[in-house]
Length: 279
Length: 63
Image 1: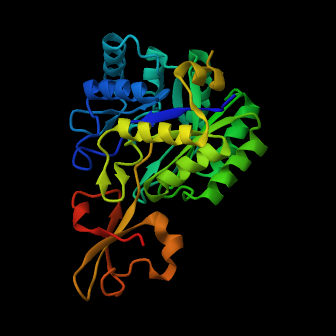
Image 2: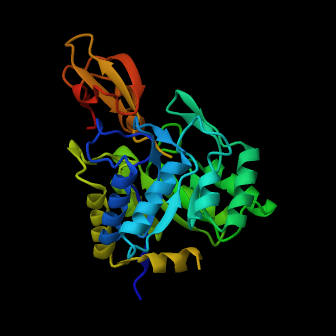
C-alpha cells in the first residue's frame, strides 16, 4: 500500500501582507475561503494565524472564532483538521496565546518548543512556565500539539517535556527550516533534525517546510525521508524565483503533484487523523 | 510562526546597484556574500529583515 503524506497549509502567518503578495488571505472571510480551497486541492491540515484590521498578526480570539465559524457554516462538507497558532503576535500574553484553544477546541495547535531571536530584531519568547502551562492545557482541552522546532535544541526540549508529562506521546513535529536564527534549510540539516527526533522522541511523526530558497528542497526531502509537508504563504510568498504565488492552492497542488509522482498518496483529513493519533 | 526568508540589503559603492542576499545563502557564497552582482565590489550594508516595502528595488543575488 502506498504511503500517505499529509499536506498542511499555512495560508497566512503573522508576517506577509498584501504589499508582499496581494493574494495572501488576511480577513476571516478570506482565510476561511482559502482554507476551503486548499482542502479541495488536498490539504488535510490548516495552520491558521489571524490578522487585525491593520493587517498585523493578532491572537484575537474574536478573529479565530469568526474564521472558524465562517468555515464551518459556509462549508459544512470541509473536514480539514484545524491547527490554530499559539504564536501569532510577539506582544501577546501567555493567556491570549491559548484562550482561543480553550474556547474553540481545534484538533491541533502549534507549540513552539523554545525561545529564539526573531529576525535579529526581537524576541520570540516561549518561557518554561508558558510551555508547561500550554502543554498541560492542551492535554486537558484535547488539542494535539504540533511541536514547532526551529533547531535541534527544541527537539531536546520536547523530549524533556515528554519525560515530565507536559507533552504526551506520540508527538508530531514541524521542522521549521531556514528561518533566520534557526537551523538553515538543507538536506543534511533535515536528516540531522529527523535523526535527533528519532533518538530523543522515538515513535514521533514529523513534517517540515523551508522558507525561501530551501522551500522545494525541504518538500522533496520530506517526501523522500518519509515525513509530511507544510506549504503556504506564511512561509513563502514566492512560488518560484521572481514569481509571486497566485494562491495557497497553487502550493498545495504542487505538493500533491510531487507526492503522487513519488509514488505516495495524499492523505485525506481522516487518514491524517489516523496517522497523527487524533482519533 | 515563521517570517519568510530574511535578507541583507546592500548598495554598491562603485556602481550604485541595489541588491540583496538571503541569509540562507551565506554557506554558498562565503566571502563573496555581499558583493555586487554587476561589478563585484563589496556592497555597503543598508538594512536587513524580511522582505521590506522596497524589496523589489533590490535584485536578489542567488547564483
